[in-house]
Length: 113
Length: 109
Image 1 (cartoon, rainbow over the protein chains, first blue to last red):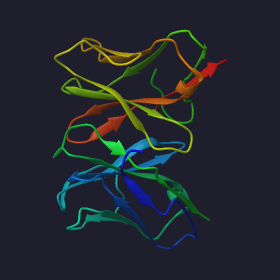
Image 2: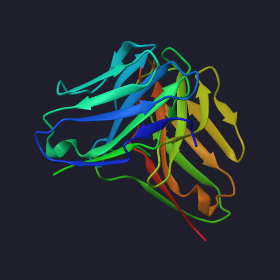
Image 3: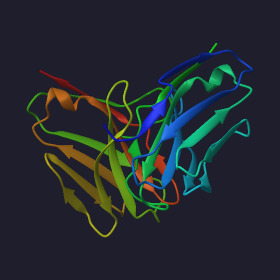
Image 4: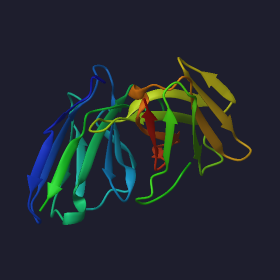
């Protein structure tokens, strides 16, 4: 158990819908990272927050957004969902501002029908 | 080794043998690297890391080798066990973390 929690574990929705994925980092970690893992793209970095502020953006679509709250939990919002958004979404946390070992949560499996 | 798309490299070894998993990275300025293990249905799990001022680092049953000249990392697992069966990713860390496509290790009893 990495200490990172993610909810929900599974999510099934329809195209055009909007969903919110939630992540709670390890106790004391200020950094939260979001990743998408699909069969044809591997593990792709989406976005990084440190202590409530956005630090880095990766391959994140404009339809996706994230935020980190004062209690350090984070939410990833996915809107206007498409079939190709079906994937595993992982959250990771670390104690470092930008570099350092990241500890991954169990992921949320999203299926868009 | 590295690959893209659906063609995930596969390494099959006999229980008790040593395994070597390879990874090529892209950014010659990267100075920190991590190996992760991902079991089916779970998130990636940290195994071992190495900084670019080292060319070798050992953990428990695992060794990471770094060759900066050719931008190559390898993960060696000694006395491979069935529980080592998983997908292994290397990651290079800069302002973000970029993962290789992974290698699937299968251990035959």
